[in-house]
Image 1 (cartoon, helix red, strand yellow):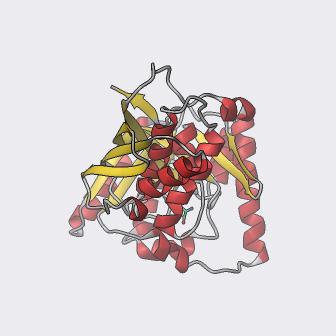
Image 2 (cartoon, rainbow, N blue to C red; image 1 turned 120 degrees about the vertical axis):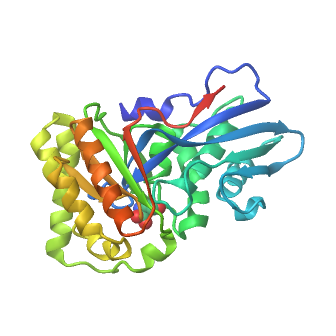
Length: 323
Ligand code: HSE
């Protein structure tokens, strides 16, 4: 499956387009057991970007709505990713990009990744010989690095491929599309504080105890095995994080209480989405997600903190052209 998905054309049978609109999904990275490696795309939550082919060269950002972000291409993740791709392929055209943000920056559900992945996906629609998903992911990582200070693909890969992806290595760079989790429901809770990925990476230890490294390897291996065998019990046991959560949860108010609410309501996994502050939880019943979201929203509101909550699914689709 992974070979097919790499070769899969990322162009949606458009007849020589000059203007397109693209939906770029929000994503959950790390998924507890795969720091910098694992991620999935969310259904129905995402940004939109409009692309116009121009005779000039390079990326020009013409409009940004929904957030205050740099318009200069070299300071904008979409501009950096798009220009890396256009320069590398020696494109004989440029692009104007409008970015319509629906995913708040610093929310932990892949806001910068959506812009970086969307940029390279959009430009790909204008190429006579489109690049593969893997090549697009590599260019999108350049934009991600501007936001987080480090090239990692755990958000940009699922944003481009859709579904759940595993980065098996960065050198050589490889992404595997994992089997779908069709029966899983996802809840996202976003307390209105901002956590910068760069800062959230700085607080992590550079060395970890061997026993924690062993436990985390077992979690990730069990997670992957559970998907191929669809072993629900193993799946539940595997989505745990002994490496990063103990450090980053201190940045998120009421984290332990919210985690307890999720487990009391029948959710099977709970954790920090990317570098936070959003938290994800998984359940086999939508009712469990909805009850958890309503109780945890009430807890935050009682404590004077605003939250957004989303009841979603894992989307099999990554970036896509829309009307
Ligand atoms: N893996 C990244 C991190 C995701 O947790 O720092 C956020 O970009």
